[in-house]
Length: 168
Image 1 (cartoon, rainbow, N blue to C red):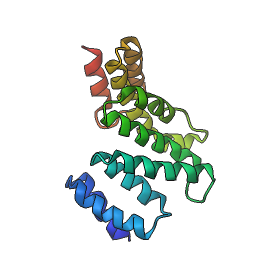
Image 2: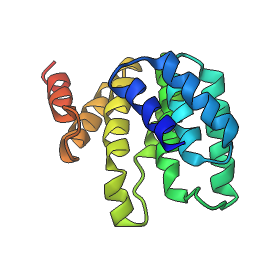
Image 3: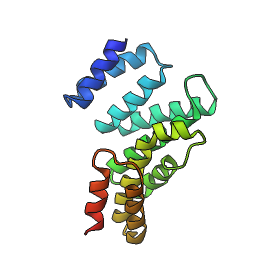
């Protein structure tokens, strides 16, 4: 099980073989449908492959389990879930629908340690929401959001990307 999951991660992140990663995770998810890690990764891969309906269904399942306070579905993971929902709409160029989910993903978490651990979702939600705001012609809000990115921790050139947009 662990080797299958790790193999899917390698296929996804290093080899960029999304369909193969999807196939592996789909098998794991069918065998272990309660596993939150498998649901989250399968939703991410489904989004990457343009299987938006499937990704939304998986995230709906995840959200319902969080709401039901099921074990291994902590409330703080809603930051990741909202980020994933936003990405589904963002990849379809539906900025107005993506924006509320990005904003939810940026909300502070009660536990500061967990907030720091999941800060990358906040950073990328801020950056991608700034792009959405630009597309919606809400320029002043986009500028504020790019500035927010600069106040947050730098992840995968997020500061560089924000600075580049602010120089336009």
